[in-house]
Length: 366
Image (cartoon, rainbow, N blue to C red; front, side, top):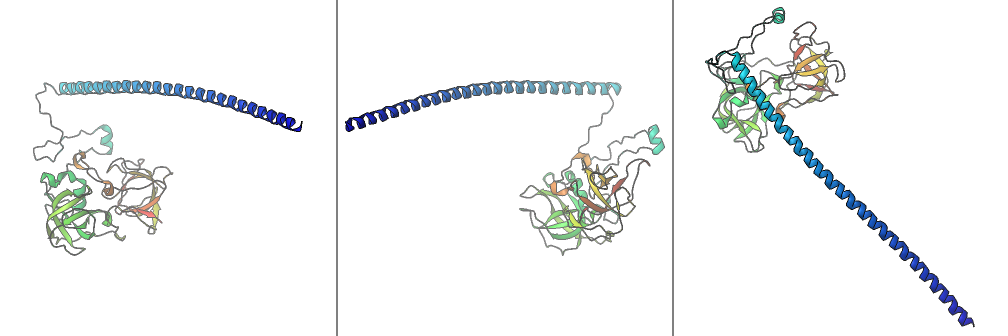
């Protein structure tokens, strides 16, 4: 009897296990159903994404069409303006001067600007001066037919070796510079007319290298090194026997637009209270939008505008052909204080912001 009871107990347990297995199978079937539902939902989402991509492609096509129409309208507007201009010039038989993109000769006409009533109060408006020819003396005491080293950077488009354009630049020979692949020994040639040593060009010298500090006239032209950076390939060197310009009282700055750090010399003033020939401490409110346009500065970057500052070497290139590279422009940051020594403070009107030209490189206040 005991064996029969045990068999019955085992059979009952087996039946319970079978029931549990059946329950697990049911749960698995439910999970499979849920997975199938999720797959269906994913397929639906993929379909919606594909539809959205198609709609985006259609929108892009419409935008391209609109851009084409706008370009066509601009062309028509330009043609209409040209026709109006020609009509305003009379019968159209007069000479229409071409836009100058290369240095011109003596036959180029100059345009005189008639002063307005406002200009009459402040002085007649003068037309902008034309860039000096190569043979004109640009720096006091410099030999005829030469230009300061940095002027060749500003007007680089006029002295390119690949065009056979050559010039003669003057400066003081500095230390070693880097220009991979340049011909000859590479040195800095430091501009003595502005920047207190900060404005310098890389020169490649193939002959004997003069001693550092020698004042030179280097004839040559701009070429590119292996890193696509400009350097002055020297054709010939000649010593300068003219007196050297008087340097500022501050120690020379390192060449290459490097921003040094140090305390401002005393006495100094905030940018809102500049003094002719003095030292100012300032913060950048707005960077110069273009070379020569000036930096908007204040006592700090978050104070009211106090002046427009022109840093050494900043002026526009002739014809707008500016070929300056990243290491040939000043990089100043907002939220940082700098100091410079300045020239005379200039104001167009008593209420206008003054325009200040720095004679030294900017130094980060330490």
